[in-house]
Structure formats: structure tokens, C-alpha cells
Image (cartoon, rainbow, N blue to C red; front, top):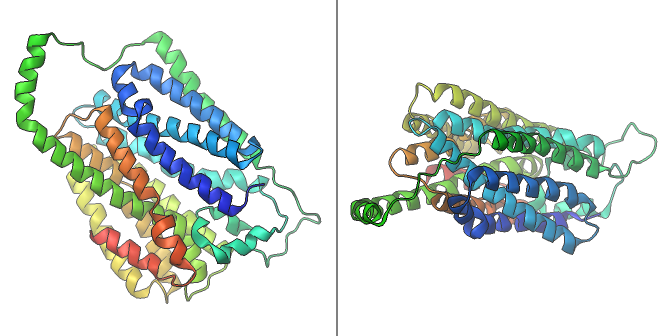
Length: 383
């Protein structure tokens, strides 16, 4: 069984390998070169295999390799999936993007519920690592079994978490099989036919005027997404640990439920965003989300360490405010530039960098100064 420190390194490795999957040939380049449907099917096959293999790897080195393969597949699919949706709905891709990103929120809700029945109830020395290294508190299911709680079962139960991974890989089979069937029905691609040399030369002359604008806007989006994902991951992964470590000293089960409220509101806000995006522009949605987050960050900074009711409310509002941002930001950007898979891979890379923020900016300081969580949330919202 891997220790929690081992799980931390696996998580960081998956994030870095997700970046490699986007930045290298497997990501944007392959999606730009080959049929989008074929690439999506291959990345789904990679996802099914990696998820199934992770819990039965046997040793840390093999687990790292499996996570590497999974990170490459997930990163490539995230890149191609976003651009595929943008090309399918060129006039208004915001509702479809919101539905696509809704799947992340649903997954965050379902994963702990799926894993809980298969977790071990045997106390281990790894419990002491919570004090030594709180950085891995993103595993919210840990708090479902606090060390001072008496379990109803008469005998401890060993971990059967490989069943949860098998069920999750089974879920992947559904879209994978659907993609294969649809490919045999219609294997067309959204890529336009190749142009002759004269048309390419004319396009280069016209594009030269817009290339600087596109690069600047893409760079701004990349920086924005990096900061946003840092806020999103810090909120989702660290709010449970903060609730336990702050002056309120909430019970671990209570803190776990608080994280569940955050993800519930996060997923719910994306459902709402997908509906209202039909009438509301992406820019208006971004302004509304930032207004919610700005008020929440200020209130949480002032009273989040002293009032349990405020912390509960802020957890819900953080989820509501953050949910629509990713899809709305991408949809707003593609209304000004033509997004390619290579360009989208840069966005996913910066998102992966932001995803490492909880470990680097919050987790290592949480034991000694829990309020760093509040400061990070406040700074990322106000930037």
C-alpha cells in the first residue's frame, strides 16, 4: 500500500505528465495532424488502461509509469476535447464548453462516494503524516475515517480500493465504445481541406496583422487560467484541511462534508452556467462570477477563521463563483481568435502549473499557519 507521501508524488507526477501530454506530440500536434475522432478514441483507451492499472501496479516505480501514461492521455484528450467543441459550435460554444467542464465537477463529487465503501478501516502509521505533511489533504475521503472515531464494524477491513478504480475504468468504457460506434457511422473531421500554395501565401499575409493580437490574448488567457486553477484546486483540495487546522478545529467528518458542499455548488453552478449561457454572454458570466468571488474572498479573510457559519457559506459561494469561469474564459477568447489544438495545449499546460499550487503554496504551510489558505484565496481572486 502506498503511503500518503507516495500518493502526493503520484499526484504531482500526474500533473506534470498531463502537461507533457499537452506540450509534446501526444497533445496539440497529434490532434492538429490526425483525425480528431481517432485521437480521442486512443486517448480514452489510454485512460481506461491507466485507471485500471494504478491500484494493481505493485510498486511505486510502476505506479509512476502508469500515472505518466494516464497523464499523457488525459492531457491530450482535454486539449482535443475543448477544441473539438469549439469547432462544432463556432457561433456560441459557451453552453457546450460549460457542459464539458461540468463533467469535472461531477467527477469530484462522485469519486469520494465511489471510493468510500472500499477504503481500509485499519489504522496505519500514515495517519501521523497528516501532521508532518498536510499537503495531501486533497484526498477528502481520508476524513471519513478519523482516528478517534469508533467504527461499527467488529473487525478492521483492508482496502479494496482497486474495485473503485475498476468501476471508474468501466465508466470510461461507455464514452469510448460510443466514440467507436460513431466513428464507424461518420468518420469525418472538422479540419478544413488543405489549401494550395497561393491560398496559403495570401493567408499568411492576412494573418501577419492578427498574429500579435492572437499571441497576446492567448498569453493573457494562459496566465488567467493558471491563476484560476490555482484558486480552484486550493479551494477544493485544502478547504477540508483548513477547517480542521484553523481556530475553529472542526471535526474531520464535518470538514469533509464542507468540501462536499463546495463541489456540489461547483458542479451545480456549471449546470446553471450551461443553461444561462444561451442568453448571457461569456463576458457577463465572467464579471458575475468574479463579483461573487471577490465578496466571498473578503468575507472569508475577515471571518473565515472565527465563524463556522461564515466558512460554510464561503465554501458554497466559492464553488458557485468558480464553476463557470473556465468555460466562460475559453469561450470569450475564441470569439476573438481561432483556437487550434496547439494553442489549447498551452492553456492546459498552464492549468497544470496552477494545479500544483495547493501543494506548493498552501499545503506545506498549513500546519504552522492555517490562515495561508485564506491569503492564497484572497490574492488569487483579486489578481
